[in-house]
Length: 474
Image: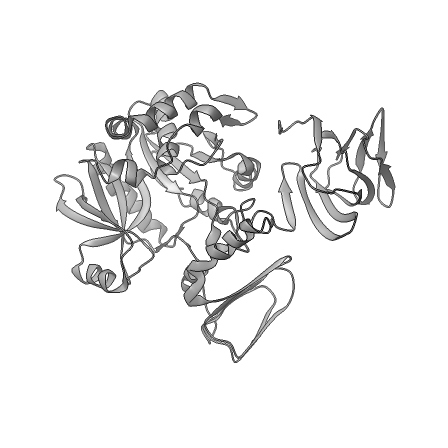
């Protein structure tokens, strides 16, 4: 079978409106929100069964690269590439570097561009829509998927369809793209039957997209060409050139190309789609109890209706409340009216302004070697749980401001401390003095669990001087 369709998965979003579960270091596409698998994994798995499909390419930022690679390994998918954006520049540059790379592989390549964080419940219908979009793309159109509107949504942009395209298997020319409407306008769109929700999913020839980008936004294309030409391989990743990519204008694919090209086409897609853009969206698509509550985790309710309640680490009890979103995590709790969840971003902006880090990290922080979790902290001390995966090791490092005590809970640890190397097992411990060069490794076949007690005048994560690192972090 000839491989002609190349999935390009965009995984650069931060999912701000799903705080406190979604955070910059662990955004919504890397979380299991609508099933036991993460949104990224679901996006990948629903591609199975599409004919002529090549291995997917992922575009993401540097901080998420190891988590994305691990999640793909868990579902036994090997990407053709994981390309790292040094800075966020919206979707047009991300799609441009993917198109340029695909043209080197196959000049006739078709690109199926998909966000990593959307929900699609009717997979067979999705496959049928892809097949229809392929016909239009082969004819030279830049095809987008227009979601058949079910309700007068005000949180989505809309696409107004134009004339039917000859030989395009149900595709229509795009008459116009419309910004998010008010309720009355959205209802008129729904009543007319000529408008679709703008899904942000596309299918087109890489060469056609590049030609149109060159005509409409040569500045974006030029910066992307330089960034890709100067890209370097880093372990299993392709690292775009930072200076060139940072100089690229930040622009969405809609604003840069789709709203200005004469080649835009739309294929209707009735596929059970939702972008999970807010907690209310997740309530809408989830199974509910007899009182229309969506409950996840250890939750107890009494006389409560139409709520979304998610508990991550403890019991959450709700009494006599209606239409609320309650999301509990180990270090933050959100309580919001379901009608106001689009404003969660304002809370995140407040956290940023106050220079707090609850919008960035969870209490458990994932690293390429495993994870660490804060247990307790106070003046001049901090306690963490640490898990190191079999065969992995932390960087060779030192700290200017803190000493560390390590207590092994389970597994075997190989410790490097200045000029000595030794093994520790369950119930054994050691001390890492301030300024000592050290490394922690797991030489065993099972996860290593330990407790770390830090003491010193400054305990921030930026107090790390790395001398050697297998993951090539700075």
